[in-house]
Amino acid sequence: MSDLRTLPVPDGLDGMRVDAGLAKLLGLSRSAVVSLTESGDVHLDGAPAGKSDRLLAGAWLEVDLPAAEKPVEVSAAPVEGMTIVHEDDDIVVVNKPIGVAVHPSPGWEGPTVLGGLAAAGVRLATSGPAERQGVVHRLDAGTTGVMVLAKSEYAYSALKSAFKERTVDKHYHALVQGHPDPIRGTIDAPIDRHPRHDYKFAVVTGGKPSITHYETVEAFRAASLVDVKLETGRTHQIRVHFSAVKHPCVGDLTYGGDPVLARRLGITRQWLHAYSLGFEHPADGRRVTFDSDYPEDLQQALELLREQDH
Image (cartoon, rainbow, N blue to C red; front, side, top):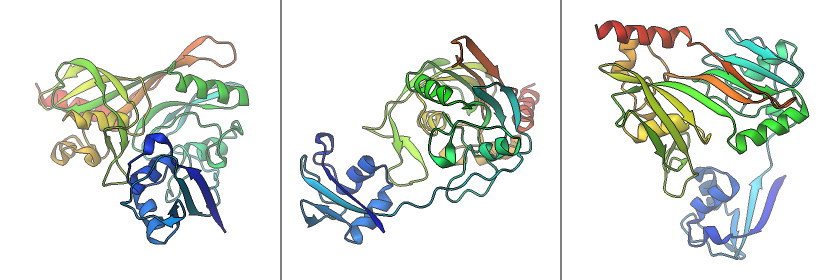
C-alpha cells in the first residue's frame, strides 16, 4: 500500500528545487524527498523529477509516498521525578524532568509525559493525533520545566488557539556562554530545518518567523543567565537563536556549546528551563500562572559559577 498525492505547485514554490520544495510542501526531510526521487516516485507534469529539477508554479506534482506507519502507542509507565503542579477538570500542569519526551515517537524508547500521566490515572482529551492526544505544546527531552496539557476537548481547542494567537506567556531561564550585547533585546530571525543536518534547525532565509525576547538577569565571567520570553514557539527556538548570535546555551553541544565549560560545570545537557507559564484558564478565562524551580543539575551549575567568580 502507498499514499499517492496529486497536487499543483503553489506560486510560492516557483523555481525552487524539487528536494527543497517538496520538503516544505509535504513536511518531509530533504533526505526523504531525495530517496523518493531516486526511486522514481516523484513526477512533474507526468515526467520523472530529479532532486535538483526546478518546480514550476501550476505544474502538477505526483508523489507516491510510502503508506503511513501505525501511530506509536502510549504505554502507561511511571516517570521518576515528574510531578503534577496542578490538575482540574480541564487541564493538568506538570513539571517535566530531564530525559523525558512529551509523547512517543519513532526511535524514542525512553519515558514520556503522556505515559507518566497515564500511569497516574490522568485522562487527557482525545483531540489530536493518537500518540499525542491532549498535547498543546512541547518541551525538548533535554529541557526541563513547566508545561500544560488538556484534559477536556474544549480546553484542547482553547489552549491550541491561545498558543497560536500568542496569548500564552512562556518564560524560560537559559545559561548562555559569554555576555549578550545588548544585555536585553530581541532576536528576530527565521528558523527552519538545517540545510545539511535533518536533526537540527537553523536560522534560514525564508524560514518560519521566529522571535525571542531576552534580558540578562545575572552575569558571570564565563556565562550569563538570561530570562527568555518566546513570542513564537519554533522547535529548538531558544537554542538556535542564541547559537546564531554566538552565545549558545551552556551544555548544548548540538548547537555549538563548549564541551570544556559543560564538563567544568557538570552539565550533560543544555542549561535551559521553562520556569513560568501563564495563560487564560479555558474554564473561566481567569489568568493563571504556574512556576517551576530549577532542577538540581542546573542549580549546582549556577552555584559553581558563583563560587568561581568570588
